[in-house]
Length: 500
Image (tube, rainbow, N blue to C red; front, side, top):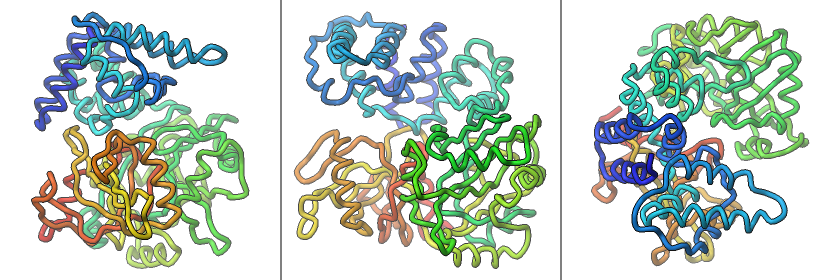
């Protein structure tokens, strides 16, 4: 398959707001892809090489001056091979070797392909929000049910692997994906509730649990082997030895657990979220210890529980983790909410006891109740400050995720809630991912997610989505989340007066 076909399809997808048109364009490309082109083509269209980092940064690529060819001839397969070589190049002479590989790659590309490759390799082509559209396209191209594709993706955790299975073996090969202890499963997500009473009324028989201000973890144990993953499926086992030790001591041979972990103060209240997250980048244990609270069990001693109701999974959870279960119960929801807030947590989660584990899905079976409105939004740009904030990037431009796979949709700005320390960090980090500048505005690649507290939303013709945030302030950055995890424009519109 020619890389030019991928570039053309990517442009077509970016140019339309229609979800059906996006799916049709992607499915048409995938249906005509040969076996060796499917995996890299899906990775390219999803916005990142399948190798992840290639070792060629923005500066290296911007300094590259290679004349483009006039006629397309570079294939997807050859592009993937060269990116693979780039990703494993290291040691003495690696700098020149990378230049040679990049020269070969860009020297075989047209001008349009060169631009596509630059954006792909620097992260500017990030289309994580395209995930749902891509899954529909895979189903269409392979002529299999969408639910079969989504379930396989849930269990494999990788779009590329799911696409290869669907197109090579159809529904039968997709059905071969099973929960595998040691391979992370995409986490089930919650939707915001209108209120505690509304969630209780809608869901019927429920369990109500503390909603903690911690970091999502997924833990796998198989005998004396333990793996710990973040919500984005990044492995952090080496950084959290105290969690590994605790899981090894659990009274079970094999288990897959979903939960939260956080650092506590001496009085038992949670430390700031950033302190918990600081442990995830460490290579060894520090004085700041993490405490896990588990709330779901997906596998226990050889039995997979994904397709069993929460009430049964909760029974297995209590057998497996004992005192390490998250605080909660099936009665007196108001008191549980009050107790959670008094303990320094965010609110409560309300979960239907008959619900199955819908990994990777933000459904209504789990609903979060918080006293304050918050949204996870994507940073699109920042403005240079003035007065006390001169020299700092201050006023953030915020975008909500387009559920149909387009770029984030701007919904407002804010400079409120930032400490001097956060301003300094933000200025350094945002300049490192700058894509362009215009007067006093620095536009950035959509990589950072920030949690915003707000009083609600209002209709506004000022922004593309027709809605704007009211009295928004920064609570914190969310390094545990990708742009694909950000709240959608629909979530912002749901805050409009009369929508609740």
